Image 1 (cartoon, rainbow, N blue to C red):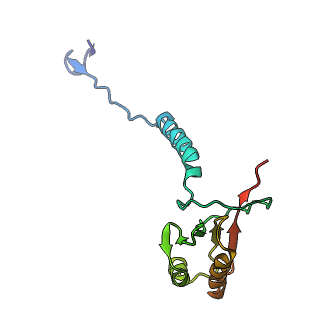
Image 2 (image 1 turned 180 degrees about the horizontal axis):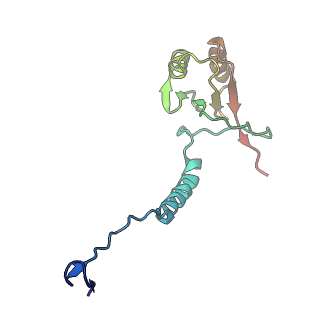
Image 3 (image 1 turned 180 degrees about the vertical axis):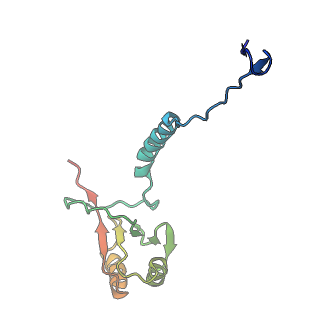
Length: 149
């Protein structure tokens, strides 16, 4: 089958040549691209659902949207019944500053967004903003919902 006849040298006997398998030097990236496209679609669908889990009826304004930054901000939410949340953890007014300092590692340049329900007493929102400002945090913003056209 795969033998060849040689004359002379070794007395006319047969010698076998062994084919050496060469390693494949190319990588097939098609399956990786398929997986990456599926992950991209999943993250595009899931990203809007990753907002803070405290349901707040935000006031609607015509203000321009803030520019996005690289690191996510800390969010303080104030519900209509006066409960205060840091991210999704409920806390009291006097606990806000120590928690913010601990989470931001005393970085007073950390971005903090305050989300107040439409039915929230403005005095409570002012107290929260005053506590945050009194602790030295300078990058504090109020979050509103955009006007519907």
